[in-house]
Image (cartoon, rainbow, N blue to C red; front, side, top):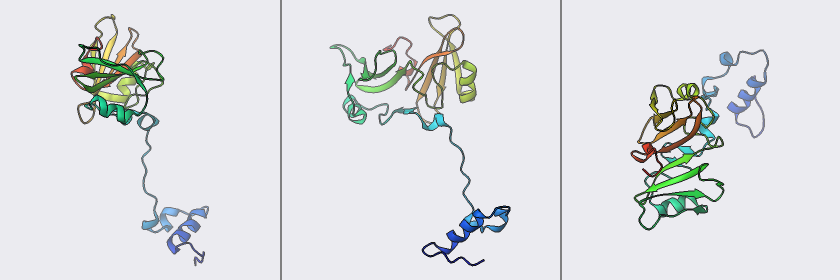
Length: 195
């Protein structure tokens, strides 16, 4: 077969012709160099979230407040009290702090809390899922602990595959996730917000 398509390199033109032929076993006739690379599908949960084990969006745990504000580049509400070492900031779009907050302690970004199904946790978990689904997503990394205040409820702690980050899913007594937070120890394990 001769390929004479002006402006198209010989190898690409021949590959296009082979791909366009129906009933031809392409793997047997296409040269090895023209074979398409194997692409593994990526789940939507892995790509459609700003939540990470090491921060949120362009922010990273450990940033001081000024670096965090620059990385966030949006309007934030909240500031430390006169004698406070731990406090929260919320993005302007947050209607209630229960929906979404950033925790700072000792002048550093250490955790973010989520109480809405709009946000997807690193690894795919979210508010409204049941414990079985969380265990399916995160496997043996899930460590369950009893809830401090709600009988039958749990904290499902998931350490990052690499690094210090942790996600904690909080369930109700029926095993449904009601909220979750991500951060670094020890703050990620605080049960009563700022310790």
